[in-house]
Length: 288
Image (tube, rainbow, N blue to C red):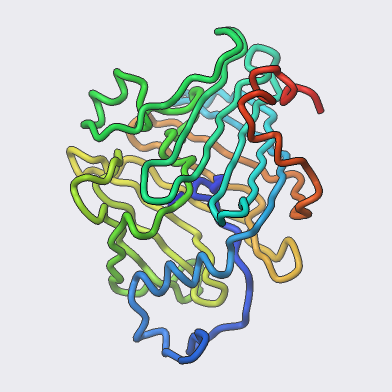
C-alpha cells in the first residue's frame, strides 16, 4: 500500500481503456486469469508518477463529531536510482506549522523515515522500523504509531514494496455498480515489519484504481480501519485521482478526511533539495 499520499500508499492511476482483457508487453491475459500480484503490478504501472506536488486540506473528526482543520503540502519525486523520496508538511494551524515527515525509500532494506517537530528543536527524529508487536512498538515510537493525531500511521506513509507482500486474489465484486477486483495482501514472511495482519484492497477494473482498503489489526485480526477514495476522475492527461479520501478508524471511532486541492506533476515544480536533512533542519520547508 505504500500511493497517501500515498494516497498513503497513495493512489494515482492511469486510464488505458481496459475492459475484458489486459495487455502487457508481449502477452495478453483476460482479467479472470490475472493473479493478485499481476493486478497490483498493473495498478503500479498505471498510477506511479515520477514527480508530484500537492496542497491538501485535512479534516480530523473525533468520536464526538468535532472537527479540526489543517493545511498541508506533500512532495514526492522518483530519484535517479528509481527509488522515491517524499515529504509531508503541515502549514496550519499555527501550533503545528512546520511539522514534517520525511521518507527515503531503500532497496533491499527498510525505508528510512524521520519526523520533524519545530517545537522540539532543529533535528529530525528517526522513526523506528524494528519488527515489534503493535502495542510495544507504539510505546517506543515506531511505525505503527499514528502520525500527529491523524488516523494514518507512519507505516501508511511508506511506499508499497510489492515484494514484501503476498497478494491473493479472491472473488470479484461490484463497487458502486462497477466491476472490481478484490485482493487480500499479507506480509510475505514473518520478518516483514508491519502493524497489519492483512489488508483487503478493492480495485475497479475499468481503470485499475484502488477505491477501498480495509486494514486488519496484527494481533486480533479485527477490522481496524477503512480507507475510501471518493470523487474519482481524470486529473492529469491519462492519470486518475480522487477528490478526497476518508480514513475511517473503527477502533478509535475517528476519521481523517483529505481534500486534494492542488496538484502539479511537473518535475521542475520543486527542487530535489526539499528532501535533504539540511533543508528541513534549517526550517526552509516552512517557507512557501
